[in-house]
Amino acid sequence: MWSLPFVSSALLAVAPAAAFAPHIQHPDQIAMNTYERGVGHFSEWSRATKKEFLIDWQAGKESEWILVQGNEGGDLDSMTAALTWAYHLGHSTLNTSNPIKAIALLQTPTHALDLRPENQLALKNSQMTSGHEDLLTIDELPEDPETLSPKLKGIVIVDHAEPLRKWQKAKILSIFDHHVDRGAGPDASPRIFEKTASCTTIVARQMLDELEKLDEEYHMPHELLELVLSAIAIDSGGLDEDSSSEADIKTSARVLARSNWKKKDLNQVMEGLDDELGDAKKDLGHLGLRDLLRRDWKSDLVDTVSTNTPTVSLGFASIPYSMDYQIDKTEFEELFDWFAIHAAWTAEARVDVSVCLNRYKKDEDGKKRKIREIALVVRDDVRIDQDQADSLFQVIYNALTTNGSITLTPWHRASELAPRQMVWTHESDAGRKVIRPIVEDAVMAWE
Image (cartoon, rainbow, N blue to C red):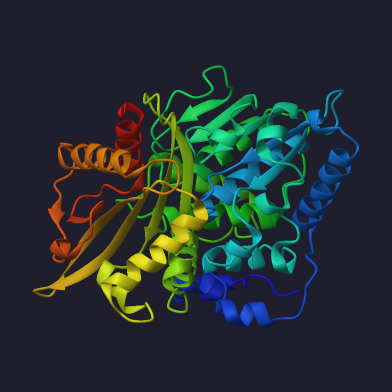
């Protein structure tokens, strides 16, 4: 089975950072490969845990299980953090009188996992079974979350501040996040909110702290350790000093010391992983607009103070291209076609409010400027009528344009937009972590 190449110490001094990362295959190439059963302890554990969970569900033993779940965007950080903590919970209690049954749930449909080429590559490098058969995804869950959630022993939330509404009946056992604390699960333990580049950093540090206190350490597969390093590397820019925290650096060093790369230089390993996975992450030219909208899509219901409409559905997409580039990827290469494709996707997702957060770089006078865009659309055909949609659009519009943390400029084609459509540009660092709470708070206050 192909695995990550290792570089001899003789080549260390002259090898580029990329030498420590795997050779990338285009997603289409990987998809064409023959079926490969995963090898190694990590793959075997993941597949066996999935089987055991489904057997217990069939037998009505859901109450014995903890589901460790990341956010529905399903990026490498979220996936790795969930897998890491589920592995730790099960193995750290395996030889005790009260062993824990825990499984990672990816809140991303199986068919959407490969919209993130970096995930596909990282899982292949970790020697997991092709087709993601080792993983439990949301579309494989045998019962609706709203009915399953109160039956479970509990849930652990990673890389997200609070459970999606469909999981709110579940007991929150722990939360690990690097976003804004929304007050969920006040009695959860551990309950850690910390500003780090990667949520996997927080989970891996807690795992190592607890592992080192055990009378006898359990087996830690190198495939999982390398997956952890990959997740931290891509989120921290290879431990770039401007992107990483002290916790990211220290935890990466602790993980590296236990991995098969323990004799390698930390910075070179992390830079190499970031280069290779980053190249894969950018390999999105084959995706159409609909896939770009859904590849990093997060949505949930939000409670309002309105008696007529007590809940509103919000959806957020993050796309690494400008509106102009996205328009060029449509069939007719016209503005109307972007909104037609967008409308078809948001109708399928059944959201009232959608926010597309675009980011790209613009060359100007030999320098690259980082530009962000916010595209806001409010529908009137899901839970709210036209008058309500007009009102809600204005509330969100005001919340975004009067927020002191960002300065928004109308997009250069804003005059061509239809009612309840708006696009702005800005040059702040405010991404989804900043914009989503602004929009959610505005919706919650809407009457």
